[in-house]
Image 1 (cartoon, helix red, strand yellow):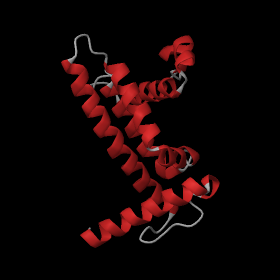
Image 2 (image 1 turned 120 degrees about the vertical axis):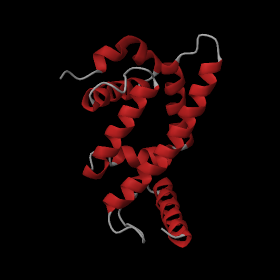
Image 3 (image 1 turned 180 degrees about the vertical axis):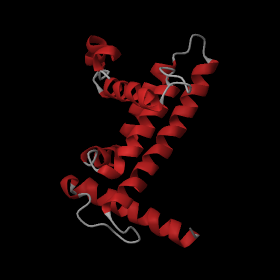
Image 4 (image 1 turned 90 degrees about the horizontal axis):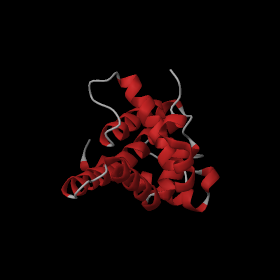
Amino acid sequence: MSWHDFHQRQHAIQTVLDHARRNPSEALIQVPAPFTDAAELLRALHYKWNQQLTGRIDVALVETGDAPHGDRVEAVTAAWRQTAADNSVLRAVLDQHSAHPALETCAAREQRMLALAAGLAEHTEPAKDVARVGMAFLKLLRATPSTARRGGLRKLMPSS
């Protein structure tokens, strides 16, 4: 990918997000060039989300590691929530299209990353199990704090 292609893609993504800010229900009605279809655009949007989230989680974990009695679950939760708040339109577009097949692999990868970063799973566990833990954790961290206290991680984890 050339610099021109990169900048063209970034401009197209920003155009979609600007349109979604004004018209949330019409975010992907028109797929701008250079993207060829909604699937390609959704994967690019998720990649942008993942870059933001991964960076913030990395910083949170470094800061938690330096703090006495640091809590990885709390650090990852705070990082995810802050990333969602700072990228609310991007998060809304991804949530609106979460059932799209193009996001299936992206979502599973994010779930695994969250479970591993929070220390809720190990790299040696089967990827499917790690993703299941991550999915439950994601439901918990998206819940309001009072719901999270009442529900707990185990209640949100789907059975195998």
